[in-house]
Structure formats: structure tokens, C-alpha cells
Length: 112
Image (cartoon, rainbow, N blue to C red; front, side, top):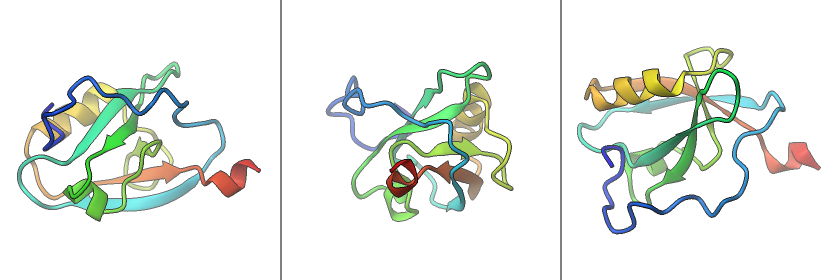
């Protein structure tokens, strides 16, 4: 996996728990500046646009240091429009750094 720097468990998923949600969430700006692996795995959301969602963050990676978490919804800067999965994967694989984007995070306290 190009995004991760851990090849041990390539088929590992996030434990099967549901990712994302329908609540608007809180936008957070992310900047991944280092060359090389980002330290994330992404999946296609099960929505009509097939947008990107973080399914796994590798311990010790630049993604973890930037604060990314499983379930973060990947968005264009501004936090409103979600990144299509294929577009985000292409951008991440391009090696262009810094890679800047927003994520929308649905806090567990918002679900209570």
C-alpha cells in the first residue's frame, strides 16, 4: 500500500466498524509535508459520490503526527466539498508535498 509505511498486515481493515456518518462534523485542516509514505489507508465511502474516508492510520506515521484518525472524511480545503476517492488517491500517489486538505470529523460526543 503506497499510503502506509507498514507492510505487515496489508489486508487489515479497521475492524469492520462503520466509518463516516451523516452529521456535518467539524472541519480540520491537514498538511502532510514529508516525502514518502503518508501512513494512511483510505476507502471509498458508501455514498453516491464514492468519496474518500480514512480507514486506518499507521502508528508513528506523518498522518498520525498530523492528527488524522480513522473515520475522518477527506475534503477539499474549506471543509465543505468531499474529495472523490479516485481523485484523492491520485493526488496522494503523485508525491506532491505538502499535501494539504481538510477533513471532517464527527466527534463521538456529537452522536450522543
